[in-house]
Length: 628
Image (cartoon, rainbow, N blue to C red):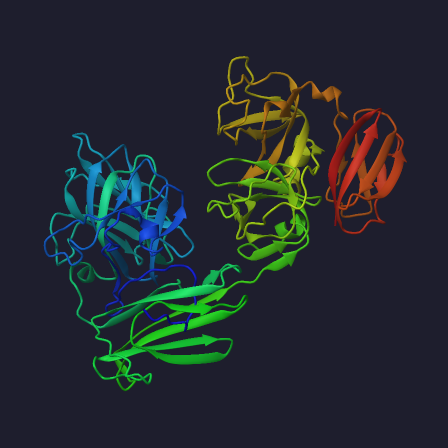
């Protein structure tokens, strides 16, 4: 097969058909005679967006009389014991109605969960299709709009029976509905099985997705047709059509993606052949006119097959690709049959350290040029890690396992690359490349001593860093209650209360009795939306009687510093030995304070982040100091 290098895209994308702009997907799961992983056998026409245990491809199809996508190819099999969620994209729809029909056979069903749905270009879920066991061990189907409640129908459907299930999303009403049919219906029924409009409204929809999780049904799914009219779900169009369904319009590819593959589909149009000179030989109805616009340059060429088209992309460059069916003389059809998509390849912006990264714009790509140190491997399914430098910390979220090199706490490296985002208020960095072998091992990192008051007031300065809360008491300590994984426990001191969360299920204190008394708690500072938290990683980080081992009631005010002076608070009337270090570890200020004057003049220091170290009566405390 001749390879066409006219356009761009490295990700394997989605093939679909468009009939007068109506039919968006005609998915028969026709991916060969060998069963396997759906994303692999489809060459990523179906793409994973979450989880790891694959959606299965079966070589057996489902059938229903008179349904256009019946009995062709194989099918998809979803399983509640697996975790991978997959999607297939189509041209985005943002108004009117959107329908998705599918042949569905439920072989087992549990207490209820959603297993198929629409997705938006930003990844939100709408029109979620649910199934649960009825009182007589049959199947009830339900629907949820986006958020809000789930509404189940009342009709009981049989297991091991093929039904035509149709999802509908009404953009005008902001409502989602589900129809369950035993036979093709050429006219949309007046009453759906269930409908709901009590959630947030979708601004656009451009993906159909499968979800695998606990309590979804065991089910076989085949013959998916996505369209903007009911009629296009139920009947096969004879109108000529051409479509580009990937990349999604305005897709921005990561800087490390150097190529792109545009996939197109032509239906009901007989393409002519090349006459040997690059022109049509007139044997068919016409050819495909391909236009690429990039950097102010326009390239046009003729294509006589709907083969994939590959292009080398340049970082920071945008591309607009158009494909059009034309007659043998190059004239547009009436009405025109064309599809257009715009996409780009991002470029990395360099930042010097993690503080600069945290201050940068989200949803953009960055390279951290300074050295960072791994401080904790969570070992969870998202391959999350915490890193830190002298300026800040951040959470690495790696659900696609991009980083395959094994790193241990204390390993350090430079040139970390990825995309900045946030989840539930927590900044996170999604890697796009594996940094490779660490530059150094056994590197130390700072654990900053803080009070509950300080941590809650300045969580932006401490998030994802190691901190030590100097004095705290567990409110739930009653001598019998034990720590459970994934739970919140209040800790208090001097009227301040904060959340201690057992965020890491592998921590060795899970199952231990919650200790009584005053403790020093060492862990990672975090948050969930507006709730400030600390995540301990081991029992050794919860130490009894720590008020004797640190400077009691140590505090620094104001922090961040916006004027010339900063005041240090302690409980004792003792002399203080104060040192301030910059992010390179160099001592930039040293002074001694008396009990009558615990104020330090910092007017000679530049704006930035520093480490403050205080020694009082043989006891030491440290704190990050921010000067603005």
